[in-house]
Image (cartoon, rainbow, N blue to C red; front, side):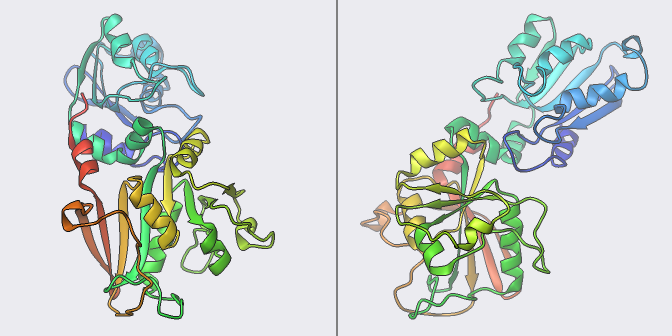
Length: 344
């Protein structure tokens, strides 16, 4: 199963489909084939692995006692590709072992279909490791909204700009490049109208030399103020989404229906505070620069915390030094508790 998880990581991190890996072994436990999902419209991991056996001969050449070890419950629906449960049954697979149950409305039920066909099914192997690896997709699928990553860069005293409003650059080049890499790993980048009107950002993911990275997140601008037609966001390689609303749950639900599973929020304190107050943040990326600015440009404004007992507690996942800056990755404690439980 750990090998299947390593295979899954080869697949794209963005898009509507999860990263899934599959290993096929014979009755002696010898690996015969392996596969992973390469994106929407391509064979799923199980079919990818099966195809590598079929490619070398006829179905009669497939050995008996075949076991499929897969990181996610085989799907049971007809989408851009056929159901993996049926493909496994047709191939004569005798046993299926998977880590995490599929929470999808239409894709779940593969385990039940396999059992109906007489296939031995074991669930929950390395469920916690697999859940962590698929946390973004699982969270989005269960909540029917994109997984939300909140990012800001601030001074050690929590300021995102100096007294005059200037903020370029609080952090150094290494930290800023990491942000571009994180943008590329997201389906959409969300900002408020205030950020567009004040900073006129391009909202692209760029490499060290300023070149556009292969994957570009869809820019989403949230707010009710008008944006000038010559704003740089309209020159983005992806067509921007202008959400003329302050209803964040509704906006996220709409983005989910458009196929967006990972939203990267890079707005200013107003938008950031709105997401935090609404309890819509799944992950925090906080870049800390070794500078002190003072003043009132705080990373967050009022988030509804009136006393220390009402504080929103976070769990620190990692702390990394990037040049002179620190990247702190954290998640809400409640999210940690939900994601940590086994899904079998």
